[in-house]
Image (cartoon, rainbow, N blue to C red; front, side):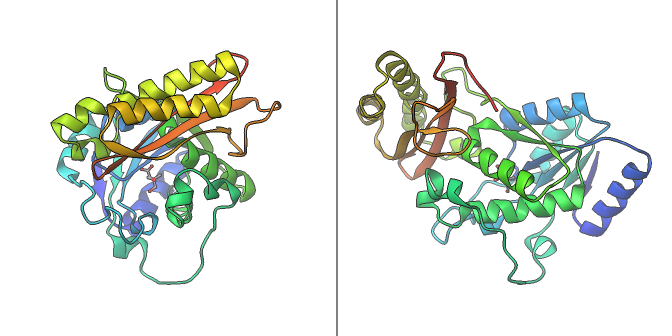
Length: 287
Ligand code: PAF
């Protein structure tokens, strides 16, 4: 496995593989890999000639009071884990390598970024699109792999790919969970033992709210039920817990095909997100 840090090295590797007609799969990450990332890489391994992973904690997607400085980082550990699932190349650039110019050209996410995480993290998705657009241009991947856990991120990147004609196919992988239902996340390491024991209540609340919506068709009643479960089981605060049409992220109506039930909850200082996507016809659905 090759670990590289510069765009020059990356361009040489991409050129060589493109000239040989190799199919390139990209797994973009911010590192501190967990089973969710490894599942993306495993799928990429099965579908591509070359599997590349970016590991870059992107400062432009963190707000001023967020955890950019303390976000967990361990390249040595990540390298071993990535090698174990057959990643060929890790690109781990510095911030200066990725953003040498304060150039002033930005991509702005649209309406989909005004709700859910976008409501409390106003420039977050602009930062995500900035780095993902750069990564797509640098790697020129045939396939790029993202987790459904970040459902809003997936929907917004899909819109960018569509609207800006990026020649890449997105592969979306279902949420990977711990045995007790907690969605895997690099931020789970922040939880104390007590917080960790409480955290599965988020997924339990989402599942009950989904059942309630399927049974009653009453959005508000289902949301209130889920919020009560979260409040009763967690020492924390709900940032949002809501139903939206997916992937457009507008209000659920009688025409809605796929519903996103999404939550962001603070447990202590740690903000965790989770979601369920389903069809109102009763079939589980993934984009
Ligand atoms: O999902 C993530 O880890 C990040 O938002 C991404 C897509 C790697 C961009 O920094």
